Length: 171
Image 1: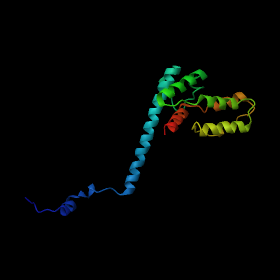
Image 2: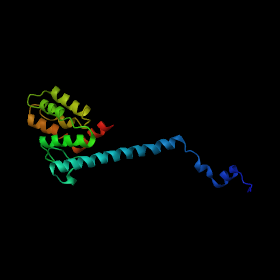
Image 3: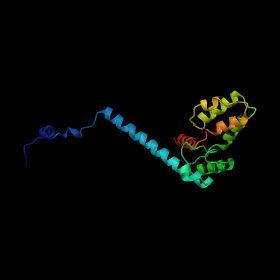
Image 4: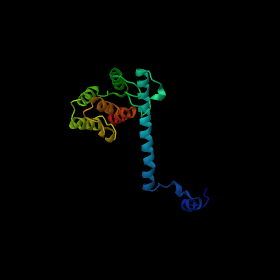
C-alpha cells in the first residue's frame, strides 16, 4: 500500500531536516560546557572526600572546610594531623601528599634562608605541589623574619590547594 508521498517531499513539508547532524561549530560549543561540568563534578567529589578526611582527622565542623580555608591557621592543623591526612589521602586517592618534600620546603624557609631559597621553595610548591598562588603574597615579607616567612608560606596551604594537588595527580 502506497500513499504516494516520497521522503523528499515529506522532509520538506514537515521539516525533518532537524534530524540532520548539526554543524561542527555547534558540537564544539556543546562539548566545552560538558567538559567544564565534568571537571567541576570531579573537583566537588575531591573536595567532599577531603572535607570528610579533615573533619574526621581534626574534628572541625564540616562547614569550616571550604576551599579558601587555610589548613594550619583556619583549621588548626598540627604537623601530626597533616601526616594523618596524607595517610588518609593515600587510602582514598591512591597517593599521599608528599610530606617529606613539604618538610624540606619548610626547612628551607627559616631564619637562614636566602631569597633564592624562598624562590626555590615557591617554585617547588607551584610545580610539584600544583599550588596556585600569587607570589605577591610572599613578596612583602621580610626574608630575615623566619616566623613571618614561615607563616606566609603556611598560608598557601589551603583546602583548595589540596584539591588542586589531588586533581593534578589524578589526571
